[in-house]
Image (cartoon, rainbow, N blue to C red; front, top):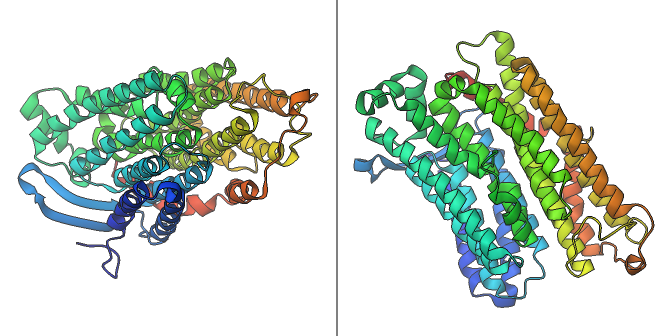
Length: 511
């Protein structure tokens, strides 16, 4: 095993920690939330330590390797993270901590609820640290189980169909992904991401696949893309998302949008582009069309909703569409010039920053909706309120900051990632960037409409005494809002750590 200088297997520890916490929470009854809080805080501290101990050249670090796991099947216990993986660990730990804080009104089987929440966190950690397909796919699939039961058992009135749709869609995508990788394993005998990426870069991966199976490399790429497209999601594979986000309890929705949706974007960057970059470059134009549709359709669909959770659900589709836009735009066929390489780096930095910023902001917004529902007896219609700024000025102010972050207001974290994506993509595909601007304009209209209808205007009599945030809620939300300002003003806090990984990845990808 090769871990940190002191030999401690940090990535194994951070993955196992939530599992231990889940086992304790399961039998802790009313104290389960406290167990989850302690576990989440420890996991967050570990994720920060990992983030601060990355190699300076952007390569994979903190590796743990056991080659004798199942060598006959190409299965190795291989963990490691670079700037991308470590940032996703920090995001997952942060959003889980926020979710646990928001879930302080779970009265039905709290032990089981928080155990499932921690198991979902373990699934996220495992997915973001595994470097062998078998190990990675195990956690990819295991994360579905707690998410399904959290929606099914604690969701809204239509939780049954929503949970089933969520599970069936994601399982269908996983089957396509699995079949493609089985074909790759049959052809190469390897499941190692690094080894397969090196083979793709020198052309031997396609040569071996063609020699064993014929000219099917493009179909394998499409299978992998389909698996990740469902998870992100990308239009037209997005239809499971609004129901799942709306029916899931808000603390669970926070995890679904804040961290779990990033598994799909991460998969595109860790697996799809390194292994199938040449094939993605061949179908770059139709993929960019789908990305633009995801951006614009997500924004227009959000504008048509009356349920606040569905507004934010479709808004999440729109925001993750920017990540897809950046990813597909950088797949420029052939050798890249210096100017193209610079634009690719800018766009990829923007994609990774957008992943983190959207996770933080979207989770915070669903947290605010949970507070609104509690104060209103479950109401969350955009037309159910009005003038809440007067009885609850702190609530309105803090949620307004989160909404403006989602809108992309300069000075807040949501602006920087989107700006970098558009700055990079415009030089790589100005047509796609131009049409995607429509998504920005419609998103601005959607966010301003929410602010207008919920917080401004005359106060309905029944909301005259709408409770403002109490001290505990202000304390919980303060660091989240503070982070939005900090990353908006000092984005190098993330970009400085991520850019070496971006340069390393682009130097090793082949389009």
